[in-house]
Length: 413
Ligand code: EPZ
Image 1 (cartoon, rainbow, N blue to C red):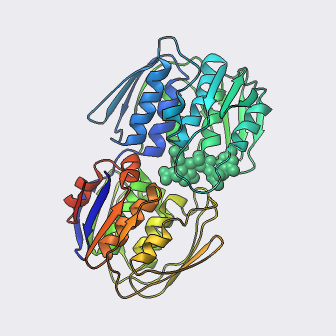
Image 2 (cartoon, helix red, strand yellow; image 1 turned 45 degrees about the vertical axis):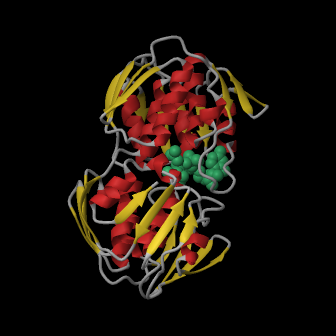
Image 3 (cartoon, helix red, strand yellow; image 1 turned 135 degrees about the vertical axis):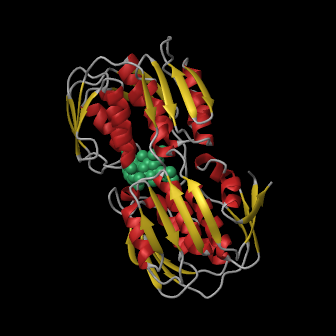
């Protein structure tokens, strides 16, 4: 998609089944490079980041297929150790091939990753931890030349980095002894990766807690259903809150979205839940108090922009504090162009509800920022144009079709 055209002012309604999680399927795909075997991954989202990751794996010698939500991988053949920098530079999760290739080959020649521009996104936590486990890492010409299978031992993460936790889990699959990760990330996607690895024979305990332990074991192929995407779910809920109407989501775990549901209820939405579905009934919106993003189970940074967009119209004030990324307010100028009242100071953004928003012509900045612009456009009077809408293709499958299926007046070029 290049440009999305949205005519706002129409309430949404209907039912959507939540897609498989982008942030679960990407590390699981990287993990297939660590283990010689055949894999079948169900409930995979049809998103660009998955296509790019498949291209990376095929460039290393793996065979992959994708059809109707099912990705199959055959990693039994010989493997290269140097991913192609072109696709690798398109997404952050390409760096997870570092851990996978160290486990499989004992070496890796990794291009520096890309991904959404959300401020500085160093790799120091990944690299320091791997060096602690005896891996030699030499940066050279925008690549990381890495040698040596990790030794067993304990690493302490100074921050519960999701990617660093995942990289260490994958590297530990080929370690000489048990690996303990203290201060690990606790996101549901970490638990889904651990569940996949356990299905492959890995001996992992503590997934979802700050202390993870991986004991080397013989590994094999597996079948796995990818976790539902809690961030896609949050996006649709915020869209319905902003536009008005009643939206039901199926195939998700509301428990994994607690802080988002709490904020939407505070803001005036009625939400009813079952274990695997929920229905949001939008109401007149008010402020949601203070929203502070943080590592799971805190309010997720990936829902900060979309919740902010949902709260632009209405009464009351919401104060956001973005503590995870150093520059994750890049969507705010576009929201202001639609009439939003947002003041920022450092990692704080204060949103004062306004009575009406007006459609505008804006340009997307990153995946969740693009979603925030769509949400604001749904609540605005008149037509909005959102350029660089390709950001959405990276993480949302069939975005326009699904948006129209719940009543939005939208099309794209
Ligand atoms: C994952 O990114 C997700 N991406 C992000 O989702 C998500 O926002 C993030 O986790 C936090 O939940 C995928 O899973 C593909 P981090 P990741 O390492 O692993 C700093 C989306 O929209 N840091 O937990 O890169 C880093 O700069 C994307 O779907 C270091 O300083 O996140 C950031 O400020 C966006 N050094 C913070 O930690 C390091 O070595 C959190 O990063 C690593 C990270």
